[in-house]
Length: 250
Image (cartoon, rainbow, N blue to C red):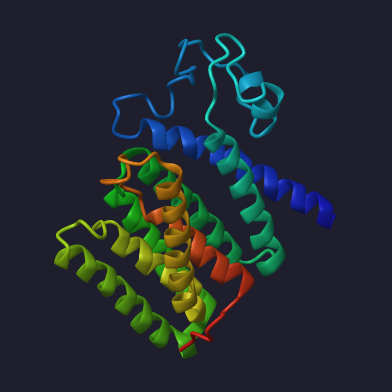
């Protein structure tokens, strides 16, 4: 029974990730979100069920369109596998509970925000507000009346810090949309919020240096990298591992 539940949650996450990927691609582009049929971005062929099976389709086609052989971005596969794994880990850690249901919703909205930010370099306000609302309810359920005050204070302080970085740098150091995402993820991480913040900056620095080193000389200036994916990585690492290298708690 436990194995069946794990398989169920993995494929539930993978299926939802597939839909969320389409949603992030079509929102604000004028394309139909619900009724529009999926097509190859290169040859415009309408995709069939064989092309739309989460994870399996990408592996069977070896990451290429079956008609024109154009490459299908590995980001699709990565997002499906990642959300599936996160759903499984969430189920194992929290069991069937209200907390689990809220967390799965948060993970779905967070994936949309990450994919949209990667594609458009902006955080959609409606999605970030939904993320904050869900995270606020999650914080109340997860941390209770004893910790909720501390969680709100630290989360608010972190969000304010991101806003000040945006305001003082006039948007050069940080985007305005990063502040509500940081607030939401801090509410979810609770006592691990400061550790999550630390991991986010570590991940951003490590990957940012890797990008700079990999680029040819003379093309290393003016590189813009969205920070929301690093926030998601850092905070989820802190939440699921409870790893706190500098004992940053409150």
